[in-house]
Image (cartoon, rainbow, N blue to C red; front, side, top):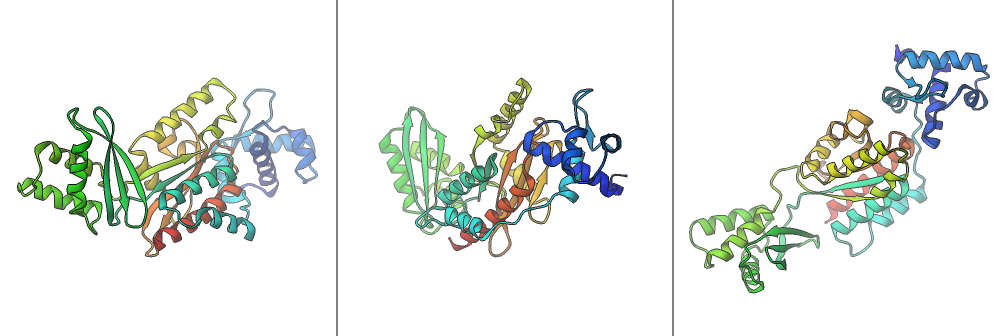
Length: 346
């Protein structure tokens, strides 16, 4: 049984995976004999490696090559063999300083947090910004081009959201201004959901003193607001770092599939579902995460919460299977704590 590995077998497995995470290359018995520190002969090590392969924890990519960990082997390592590093006081202060810069909106905090994570992990990072459920300060419409307009939502806490919507080809800047003025006169202190309910009811009851074109604009603009409790938007940084480890054409295709998945709207809910699947930080290796099962990436993700312990978003790192989990886990965990604290202050 896997759970009954001897100390010797665990030592060999740990060494192989640690080496694999540094180099990405198969590890042979001679390399292990020089570095494992167990005073084992090459023949004994080969025997141990054969047992680990039979247990499904290692595999040989080529007949004469060394061994690489399987997904099952990586899971065993993460769950029982890995040593998770602790952040130094200096590293904690650096994370706090990066996220807590004065005068920042929530969106800016999220963007700086993702850039920080990407830099520290040498992988792609993502953060799911919380659904906007705070009072609005102002709504603005700007015509981008014929048939498309930008909706700018300014919250009372300083957070700004930009969304693009399709509009009638007849819409002009004055029409957009009229629609914005109509909304701004009625949204005082209301959340997006409250504004939506109030305006829709007023229009349906024909109490709105606006023409049909403006009414359509108003309804379209408000209809862009998130509906479900798990909605939000994703901020991603460091995608290019995923290509630094690519060694074959099929790996490029896997990266392309991952980028496409991250752009899908339902990805937000799936990621939050993953983050809520357990207590605290979650680790998904390869096909364990159904969302990325077709591309085989690993993900470390943690929810962040309000002071009332309500999950409102998530932050994490996506990278290759040889992600440095021991380093990434404490960084993701502490960053999530800092973001949750900052969200609670806004």
